Structures are given as C-alpha cells and as structure tokens.
Length: 55
Image (cartoon, rainbow, N blue to C red; front, side, top):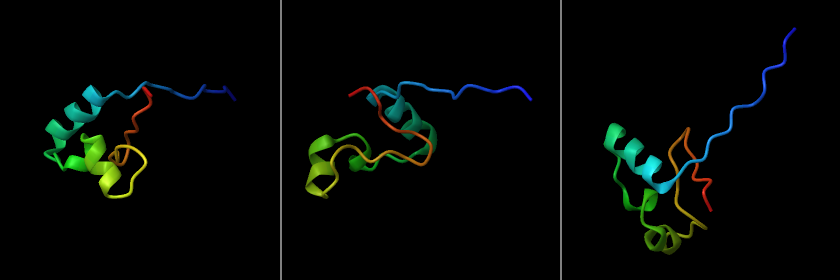
C-alpha cells in the first residue's frame, strides 16, 4: 500500500474572501477581526473546509 502525504495549503484572508464570494457568505466574523473578537472568537471564524493559516 502506498502512503499518501497530507496536503497542506496556506489559507489567506484573500482565499477566505474568495470562498465568501463563491458561497455568498459575507458575514463579518469571516473577514473582520475586530468583529470576530467582539463575538468572543480568538480570530476570524472560517467556513467548514477553510482555515486561515497565514498568521
């Protein structure tokens, strides 16, 4: 059996915004850090399969 290495990508704010454009989900907690903090999140809240990894 062949081992497949894990796929790792860097997710940036730009990528999160591109995903928002594709999904139509522009809720502020996905792109506005201050808004996310006000809701009690330590950083932006990402959508199901995306995570910001550039910080």
